[in-house]
Length: 129
Image (cartoon, rainbow, N blue to C red; front, side):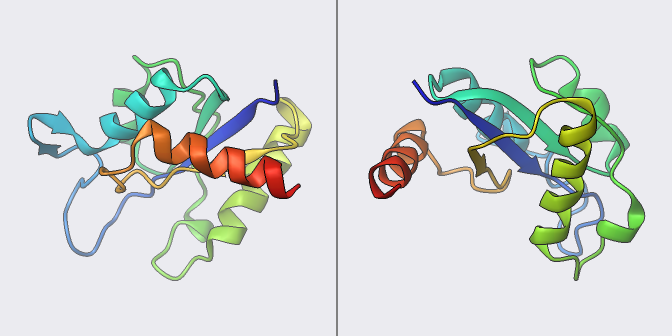
């Protein structure tokens, strides 16, 4: 079975909602929807967070997720392309962890995403090679 690395980009400093990853919706923190997806997945080997949010790092430590670094401010702005965040993370993985062959980006604000959505995306990716 092919395993995927889940990548969660969760920067601090939302213009719209302060601390949006830690607010509760239906009594569940926004970030917990992503953690729940990871926990229930058989296809995600590990979950890694790229963030500059110290509160989120402190909160996420109680979960089985990888929190490798505090994301540099230069790639934490409103206009930072996601590509830059992923390249930075992969550079770290290559030096300190492993460079994943397969990964899936899990935006933490996608609270309506279900595990079946992740599994279907992975299956489609594998089918189309």
